Image (cartoon, rainbow, N blue to C red; front, side):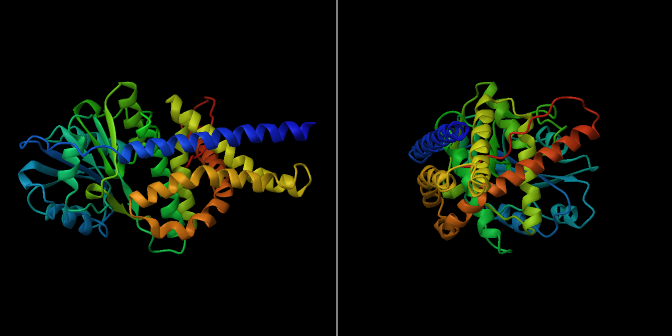
Amino acid sequence: MVNALIVIVLCIIATLYVLLMWALWVGLGRVLAQPKPAEPPADAGISVVVVFRNEVHNLPALLGALRAQTLPQHRWEALFIDDGSTDGGPAMVEAAGDGVALLRLPPRGKKPALAEGLARTRFGTVALCDADCIPPPTWLAELLRWSHGVALLQGAVLVQPTGHWAAPLDALDYASLQAAAAGAFGLGRPIMAASANLTVGPAAVPSAHHLRPDIDTGDDVFILHRAKRMGLSMRCSLSPLMAMRTRFDGGVRQRLARRMRWASKATAYTDADSVVVALLVALFNLSIALAVPASACGLLPVGTAPALWAAKLLADTPLMLRYLRATGQRNLLPYYLPLQILYPFYTTAEAVGALIRSKKRKMKRGSNGIFINFGAWKG
């Protein structure tokens, strides 16, 4: 009797997950079907804000990409915020030339530095990116076009699968997050953003308080959720003319630590859509991870875990194929099945690690509050 109830609960969770992913597939289709906006006013300008610390190896590529922008230089500026670098990065920025300015700050963390930079921009429209990003020459011109008339614009972020044997899996994993995020935008219920290619208008520019400086990650998501609460207009575009390229360095441990850091911010979510999605996806992946040993021990029918994996493939594949095709990342498809097999165990370990990390952070601050971790989520 107990086993039958467990199987029924698992079937309900799997069904809800499939319906969620199919809804995101519909939303992604809406994003891809958007008509290209008209040209913005000829005098429209845009500011770029980059917070960095000890990025001397990454800055040359970004600075070179900014110098190659097709948007006339008098219509943009780039403000680099040095958050206490000890290498030659600040000097490199100072020598970059027209349109690029440097603001040096003591090391206080990315969020206070970002808030300081946002308060000093010349143009009302502000594009955010990271020091390890490389935009195409048409990036700023296309951002101005797509951000005209909206308070927040999310562009595509493409992770380059180079540098480590796990890099292709990492790139595909990140692509799955981006696919789900784009689909949520298309449904009119955005839940996640990426500051590597995020543009905000004057109404969506946050203060330091809105960025949640008590949490060491998630500035992009908190900007999005604030704009959503305010009822501001938002848009996502996967236009290749403004797709940002980046890469993730490090080995398996560094990659897992990065995902745990991302997941830890989910404990501070107050957006209902984000909480529901995070819970559902975490529960479904946990169900698969636990069904394997439970079936092996005879606690569940032998076919439970394969059936759940089949449901995951049925749910994820249409969304991923549409996204990878739209963003020119079909080279990642050979890694799709291996990632599908590994992901439930990977994300469960990540969620547990994020919970431990978040609790340590709470204890360090002396908080006695109740802490709930929703884990990472993915489409």
